Amino acid sequence: MTTSSGSAPQRARLTSLEQITEHLRDSPQPFFYVSRSATNLLGLDRWVGAFHYITLRDSWDGAHPRAFAPTNVPALEPRGNINIVNWLLGNEQVQQYIAAHTPAGLRPKLVIAMFDEETEALCASLGYELAMPRVALRKSLDSKIMTTRLGNEAGAPSVPNVLTTITGWEDLRAQAEAAGLGDSLVVQLPYGDSGRTTYFVASREDFDRVASEITGPQIKVMRRINHLPLAVEAVITEQATVTGPVLREITGHPELTAYQGGWAGSELYPALLSDDARARTLALVERFCARLASEGYRGILEVSVLLDTDTDEVYLGELNPRISGSSSHSNLTPGDTTLPLFAYHVLQYSDVDFALDLARIQEQRAAALDGETWSTLVIQYPGPGVDRVLEAPRTGRYRVLDDGARLEFIAPDLDWQALSDPDEVFWMRAVGEGEVRGRGLDIGMLVTRTRSQEAHYALTPRTKRLIPAVQSLYRGKTVPLPQVYWRAGVRKLRELSRRSA
Image 1 (tube, helix red, strand yellow):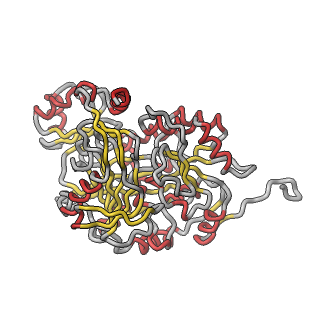
Image 2 (cartoon, rainbow, N blue to C red):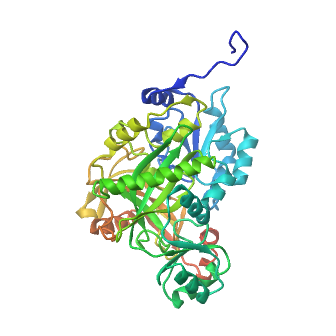
């Protein structure tokens, strides 16, 4: 359709929060979240009328009307988030599902957490729009070295550090001393996930254990501080940056993760921060996001922040330029009174003109989460070996018995948005019957309405009981394998376990 002058018609501009909410609910434009599990964006379909989940396995046993999982996943399933996504995109059943749920004249839009150049090429060849920042930009910004530099430019400084290369222990100590970093150091490689390339070095013995990893490449060497690990998700749009709640990260607990310093969830509770510390944290994130916007970044991201508990200084930590583990919290909408954070990412990629009343949005989001307590715990299989799952707990609500020692299934549920009772929890299953578990593999997420950590980081006694209570709901057949095979990684173990079965 054209106007009388022959020019294309102007698109309607969404100028109020009510108009934005109505558009997201009623628009026929489909968005498909492609991932191993739907966990991070679960509940978004309450607000985005044409939002779908495409996953490797069905966590709901066919009960979710907006979720799809192919039935022809091979026995030796793809491993690694990116490989899983690319396999799904190449799957004929998935392609048929996307086609069947895309109205004529519209192009499917895909949102994905982890992807690469192959993913971009697959989307282009299939006629899909990847509604995410480009791989090249994400890779550039994902570097801890680049994050530090951009943060400095934005007035969002990191913990005192030096960006450098080292030749050995003596060189590391000399550079740390010259920079005034002290004797206890944190050394990071430019890229890493869930703490897997972060090393704590306070002695020659510490150094020798990781020397082959950190000698030679560019690294970030930081002073080790006593800190509160925080995380904030945000969405950078053409109009403004919308920030999510300030969360306390759950990291490094061996009951949850096999990786030293590894991320295993987050929690939100009223006494987490003072109003002043929260305001300074959000201001730092907003300054940093403004700098990222000038680099062309648009959409969802997560910023980790370190609050020095000795000095009360707030420091920039790391950048995750993607959908992250914090998304589960950022998209909470208690009482259905406010848009989930990721809705603004969808809005940014919806090909509509809009204006944001940022003050009202933030006020509404703050009111919805005021006084709320939530924890998300990502639970890994503790090992030590590999087993094939014979029984697995259903996705849904469970009643907490014996102060966390036992869990009783109440009812299946699609998501945890309506969870309100501290004596109930929600289990989101990631590994089900017939699949294989290896040490360090995420088996699911437990969502509770209680805190998971004490003030000084230790897991609460109730949380320590809940974790084995979840594990006890699984039953598996152990496949003993020589220790040498373990070094080949989980994928090789899965292959070997099936041969042994």
